[in-house]
Image 1 (spheres, rainbow, N blue to C red):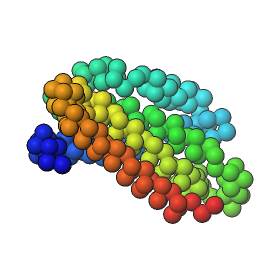
Image 2: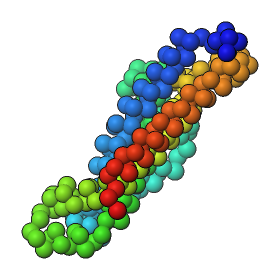
Image 3: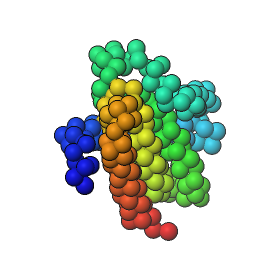
Image 4: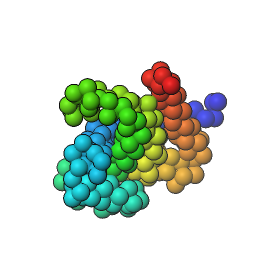
Length: 221
C-alpha cells in the first residue's frame, strides 16, 4: 500500500475523478433530455404513431443513424470547430461535453423509441376509448409503462459515457482517462494506470447497481 501511495499523486487522482464524474453527469443529463425528445418524436411520427409524418420520421431516423454510426473518437475530431466555438478550447473536461452529448443523445433516442414501441397497443387503444388526449396518452400511459426500459437504457448509456470520457481524456479532455494515459501509460507508471482503471470500474459498478435498483423498484411485472 505504501508503494502505491508513493507513486500516485492523490490530489491529481481526486481531481481526475471529479472531472470524469463531471463529464459523465452533465453529458448524461443533456443526453437524456435530448434523447427523450428525439425518441418520442420518432415514435409519434411513425406510420402507426399518434402524429404520423413520414418526412419528419425519416429525417429524425437519419439523424439518429448517422450519429450512431460515427465512432466516438472520430466524432470528437469532427466536432472540434463546434467545440472551440462553444467552449473556447478543444482541451479540458468542458470541451468533451459536446461530443459526449451528441454521441449519446441519438443512442438514447433510439432506445426510447424501442421502449415506447414495446408498450401494449391495447393499453393505448383503451386510453383513446376512454377519451384520453394524445398528450395524456404520452404522459400518463406511454412514459409510465415504458419507465423500466427507459431507466435501464439510461444505465447502459451512463456506462458507455464513462468509457467515452476515458477516450476523450486520452486526447486532452482530462479525467481518469487522461491521467491513466499521460501519467500512467506514457510514463510507464503502472500504479497510476491501474488505480485510474480501478476507479473507472468502481464508477461503472455503482451506476449498474443504482440502475438495477430503480428498475426493480419500478417494474411491477
